Every structure is written in structure tokens, then in C-alpha cells.
Image 1 (cartoon, one colour):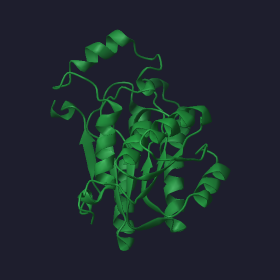
Image 2 (spheres, one colour; image 1 turned 45 degrees about the vertical axis):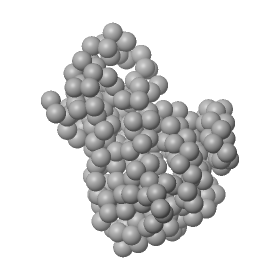
Image 3 (tube, helix red, strand yellow; image 1 turned 135 degrees about the vertical axis):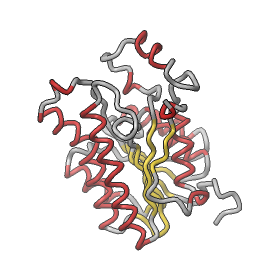
Length: 251
């Protein structure tokens, strides 16, 4: 263990969904704390913005564009990465839709992006022994579908609840190699995901009033939790869903 257990110096970490929001901030904070970072997402132009932000800390991120719903891209990503000390799975999609309109095709699309894609990537990384012993896997899930059930979020919440469940099975099995697996369950976070036009800014401002801390999270609020779970400071933490929600689940 390093002198500073929260340091990521000497660790190599893969972050997916690193082109924006939580993934981007997690990649930046990981580099700031000393990690060698590999960043992946679909959008190469926005990945370049993340790479430049990381370069400000004297780190040169490795950029590997990938569409995680593509089996070919996933195989290529797994083959391209070196042995990893940490993996952060941040890619995902939101959807607000009442149950009466939650048709099978909507479920299929959401689960393909939010569940099956990260699960397949993690499966291959583990199978091909790309994650080092005593490594750490962090999956960004959600408070939705686990302890807060807001209207219109049945499809999204179900996909994230599935991630939380799958994480526990992985934590149990991966412990044979001393690899830790945890999820982070944020409430609403100020990312492009919540500003996609399905809810007005006025509705978002009103919704914030439900939070004891009277604001939504910022990407760095979640990134700091990911850094903790990647670091040696959490070396006895596995199979846990870390809730970061501004107190919303106290309601």
C-alpha cells in the first residue's frame, strides 16, 4: 500500500464513457491523482477534449474510441488495453417514459446500452485476465430503481438495478483473484444526460427542492467516490453500492 492510500500513482485505469459527464470527470480526477488513464467512448472529438484536460496534469491519456454495443469494438478494446489496475464503467443512456409506453423494443435498446454492453466488456476483461489481482472495478449504476422509484423511470431504473445485482455476483466470483467490484448509485447529476429535453429546466429546479442539500450532484461528486473505490483506501470494500445522492434517499 502506498504512503497515501488515496493516491492512484502507479495504477493503470480504463474509463469508459469518458467523453462527457461522470466518465470524463472520473478520468480527469484519476489522472490528477497519479493514474495512467485509458479513455474510451464513441465520440472521438469529445474524447480529445478529455485527453487535453488530462494533459494539464502532465499525463498523456491513451485514447481508444469504441462503440460498446458493437461486439467487434468491444473485442478490439479488450485486446488493445494493457493489464489494468482499475476499470470504471460509465457509459450509459437515460430515458423517461411512462410504463404504458414502455414497450419491449424500448427495454431492449436501454438494456443493450446500460446493461449488456458494460457486462460483456467486464466479462471479457476478466476472462482474458486483463484486470490484475487486487484490481478494482467500479460500475456507475443509479439510485433510480434501487431505492428511489420516480415516475417515468421504469426502463432506466430496471437497467441500473440489473447492474447493481450483477455487481454482487461479480464481487463474489472475482474475489478468488482479490479483484473488488462495486457500484456507485448517484441521484441526479448535472450532466448532458439530464438536459436532453424530456424535462424542462423549471421542472429540474423544482425537483432539486426535494434534496436535503438542495442541489443536484456535480460530476466531480461522483468522480471522487470512484477514485476512493479505485484506490487502496477501499481495499476491504467489495460488493457494495455506494450511494451518493445529496441525502435524497433519506426521504
